[in-house]
Figure 1 (cartoon, rainbow, N blue to C red):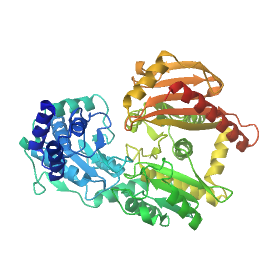
Figure 2: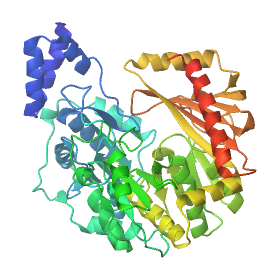
Figure 3: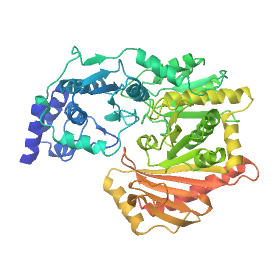
Figure 4: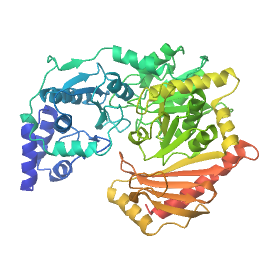
Length: 550
């Protein structure tokens, strides 16, 4: 084996406090497995605006106690002694260990650490940062990633995820950290290290039950927390708001880091909602709700006239919630925001009501920076932050608050003899049918994604799905319009008839993601417009697949 590789591995082994990863690394060294060692030490997880996320294991290219302690030490150096950090965690493998290692490093560096009392939804942590007046927050979660992954997300004092230049400052500070075995560490008995009580969760529940939920409560709900940490908090929120307890998928009710009933614990993945939809049929549910494992996202399903169910897209839920919040709030300074890959419908709704609208880069860290007066934000990947006249209780996506608000909206519709599908048809008639879809390509070799992006930049398509490409915009150069978006690795095509395509590499998974939208005028039945739009989206996907060359 390479002597440099062996040296790096032995240096890591000397500082690693975890017997499991020490045993893993020792076995690789003793077995001479150069390939496995190079996977772990040939590169490293990069700290960015999404923090850290990766596979559990030994080495700098894995999530482990050394990686987490280095991240905590970097955060401590940027913040400085005396600052206050709130720490949360989900129920994934090692999440509690990583949270307590973070508290130990922070308090050892002279900061104060408040640790949430048990595995809780990410929005509870985001809420707690502002509620407690903390300087920063950390949550240990890999959201909806596979069971073998974990992650580390950092929030700033406004309760939203960090953005540049804070991420690069923390990254540079991490680079300056020496062996973690040399770090001074605090302990749970120290005055600077406290474990929070249930009062933080109670304050969060009070905040989300004050959202514009209406007064209708007759609703049958089928729900799954998808083996994550959302179940108890969502049930408590429904109870506090006056709803009956949802029927919950028993096999997915308890937190389980192995996610045994799903291939990917993501409501958007094929098959992930099968058990919830089966439960919905058995209880004749009015709506289906799901959270991802850290409960910052919310998926919504609705019954069909034929007795089946279908899941709504994130854009459909975003449009319903956005118009609902606009109607339920007042004031000239209101702002609603979504991302460049989400539907353009929210902008049309906002214009109709005389409300400001903003488009941001992908990710809630950018939505929360859209501007003052923000009362609603969403992204098509099932993320929503719902506000009221008092503003946003959570400055991040909140799957619990969104679920509550959807339930209130559906209960009001039921009282009027209508459904969420009827409300969507109303929007289609008012604003035109905005149909969206995705084309995602998962790869084992990230260079394939870079190659596809390079080909599209060198030879932009002139027609997609029978529509002329009216403009091709390279977002790596920044936005060419008045929105003033900062540069990002993406391409945006505007097509005839109001259609749009955005192509970008995923920030958290080895995927190339393409976001498609067509707008169909409704001159007759909405169902006919939906059928035309579906055909148009299929044509776009077919041509785009060829253009990608993957």
